[in-house]
Length: 133
Image 1: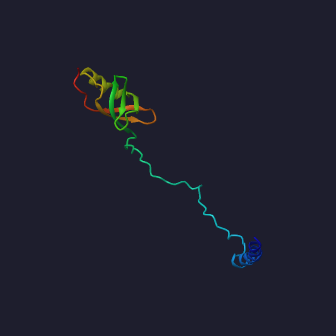
Image 2: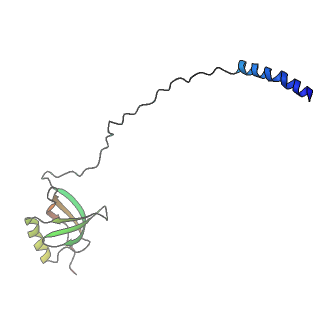
Image 3: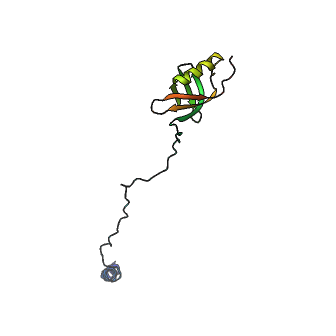
C-alpha cells in the first residue's frame, strides 16, 4: 500500500503539469455572423387567374343540378364540392324559356355559363340539353 501511495504522490503532480502543458488555453469563440433573411419582401407566385373575356364576362364550366326560367344551379366541372347558382338575365331567361318548352336541362347536363362577376348574373348559357324523360 505504501508503494501505491508513493506512486500516486509522484504521478498526480506530473499529470497536472502535463495537462497544463498539452491542453490549449481557454478562449472565447469567434463571433458567428448570422444569416439574415429578409421576411418583409413577399415571394411572388404567379397564380392562375381566369382570363376575363373582352366583354367582361367570366366562364363557368359545370354540370346542371337544377335549371328553370329564373335561375340555374351548376356543379363545377373540376370540383365536385363547388356549387354555383346564377340568376338569369332577361335575354338568358327568354332563351331558357324556349329550352324549357322543349324539355329543359336535365340533371348532369354539361353547360358553360358566361356570367357577370360583379352581379353573378348569367348572361349566356351554352350546352346541349338532354332529351326529356
